[in-house]
Amino acid sequence: MARLSFEGVTKRFDGVVAVDNLDLEVNDGELMVLLGPSGCGKTTALRMVAGLEDVTSGNIHIGDKVVTDVEPKDRDVAMVFQSYALYPHLTVGKNIEFPLRQRKVEKAERERLVVETAATLGLSALLDRRPGQLSGGQRQRVALARAIVRSPQAFLMDEPLSNLDATLRTQTRADIVTLQDRLGTTTLYVTHDQVEAMTMGDRIAVMSAGVLQQVAAPQEIYETPANVFVAGFIGSPGMNLLKGKLDPTVGARVVRIETGSVPVPARVASNRADDVVVGCRPEALSIDPEGTFGAKVSIVELLGSEVHVVCRVGETRIVVRQEVSRGRPNIGDEIMLRADPDGVHLFDAATEKRMAVSGL
Image (cartoon, rainbow, N blue to C red; front, side, top):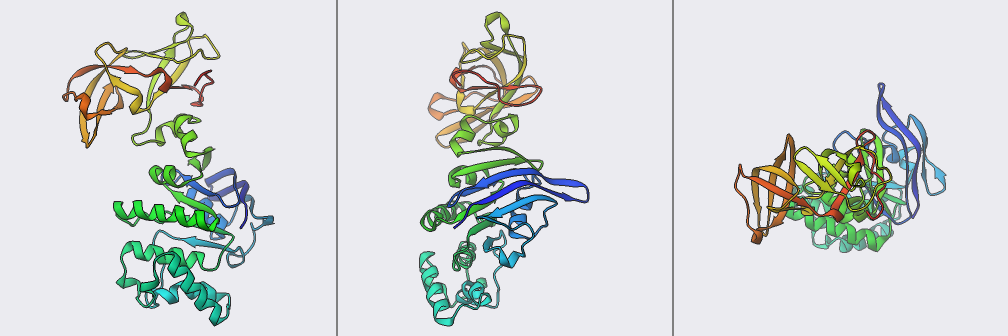
């Protein structure tokens, strides 16, 4: 297996920068998730590793080798596509075998590897079927089998679960994690689905508008987002973000917002009346008659054991998550909210970067 890295990689399409000076290293045996909204450059980055897109500037390394100008067939990577890309006229066995034929592996070895790989992915009983006779989940497993059968240095996965229904997505992402852990193959996995990213990745690389925003383990991304974009993008729902100003009269331990105030858990580096963006996860807010800021209820979403109360603080939409047992307000109610100080995040309003707050 091998380390995979981007070194100052930029990609332009007719003057439009799709990937901007990307520096990123995927460790040997790691499952790294490239996460971001549509158009952020994540798939372009993946395709440059595969050699399907040229690099405008910078270098891509696989192991100790610079592969920037190496032909795709010589990069020793395997790609799994969103559309499966199976040959409809070939059986499952022949689809899995195809990359081995391309490499002129001897017949006996091909047969052995196909049988072993099919068994690994629970496809042994399907080897004589054609793709049209399979479910979406089965076809995706065939695509995975075709990728792993030749033991490449790295797997490249481009939104491989997008065509599956919710139940199959949950099962298949667990299968991929188990498989990757067993094989120990370096994997770069592209998705716009942050639930996939949080549950699958050893680390997550968040991108926006072609620029890398943060690289960290899933829990670190969730608990200490580097900037306003990451805070709002990660989480379901994302972090609530409200504009405000630090109040120096109380040692900058309170942010004044439009309808009241939000406590800060510890002193910030400056006691000036700085403009900030204050962030709170939905679970860090609670409805409390003695709360510190007001809101008006817009929508109440009942989700089994919990309820999402969608509110307006001035013109800003926020979400409060609470257990159903605590009751729920009515649409149109004027309520008071309280923020758990330990769940408050501060971002500089000008740079949108996370502010240094001791104790956060």
